[in-house]
Amino acid sequence: MTDTTPAIEGEFICVVCPNGCAIDAEFIPGDSPKLIAFSGAKCPRGEKWLRQEIESPMRTIATSVLVRDGDYICASVRTKSPIPLAKVRDVMNSLRGMEIDAPVRVGQTIIVGPAGTDTEIIATRDVAAIMPI
Ligand code: SF4
Image 1 (cartoon, rainbow, N blue to C red):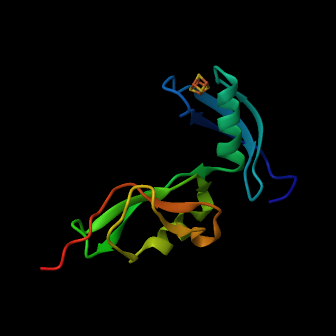
Image 2: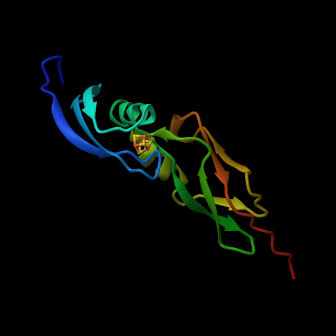
Image 3: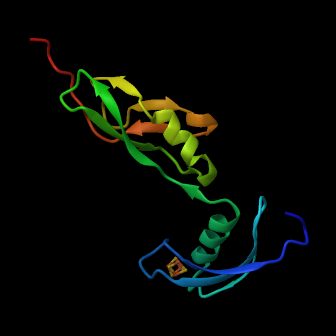
């Protein structure tokens, strides 16, 4: 994409609050997308959200990993903070097939910096260790 890339228009639904404003946006697409104009946001938070969604979209991942010797076979996990949308697949791949040892505690760090991001994967449920018989 170059400086001559034509702008395109699209409608976005703001997810910041339950109002769910429909925002019409005009933006330059490509590797360095840029918001040019918009209308329909009822407050400044909508503009902030729209600019990030177009220019640098972020996502939070929630999934689960397998647990060895636990009273449950897997533990739910999530990213501690949002990551770039472009990194979601890489982070999911880094979790695929992963097994951790019980016990697992809510808030426990499972991975630091998955796929080169600056977040952590943390557990969101407890899994107790099974006592040997
Ligand atoms: S633009 Fe403002 S009022 Fe509308 S959904 Fe977003 S945060 Fe809510």
